[in-house]
Picture 1 (cartoon, rainbow, N blue to C red):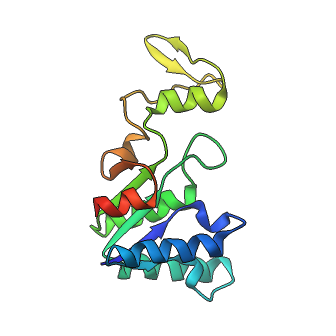
Picture 2 (cartoon, rainbow, N blue to C red):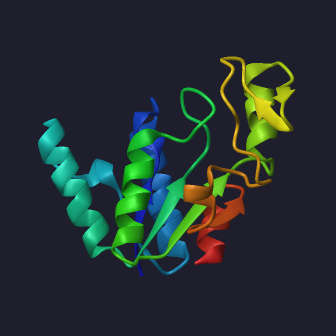
Length: 157
């Protein structure tokens, strides 16, 4: 299968080494990795269209949905997941921790959630979705979520 690898890993200082390792993991599992870093585009519109084309050509998407710059997954990754889902492609998301959204918000904020009217509130006074899911329902319901990393996601393909 051709697997599009979505996630904020492209922002890592060692992104090229990560891409090589990810490509090898996919090959060892009998799949081809489609990695955004493999493109030649350098402009924002060019990168966007190249990544959309890769998702269109993929058989499935494996998405790193770990928190990125806060409590939620990378916004670009969420767009890629949504686009793949709209195309009817299977999406397997992976998370390093097995925790609910409320537990993650508490862990990352470093403070216990306040409760009002039986619902949890974050530090900004906004309600936190509390369905016992590891991510917002719009990600957790349509995707298959595995705990671990890329290796575990590959096992779920």
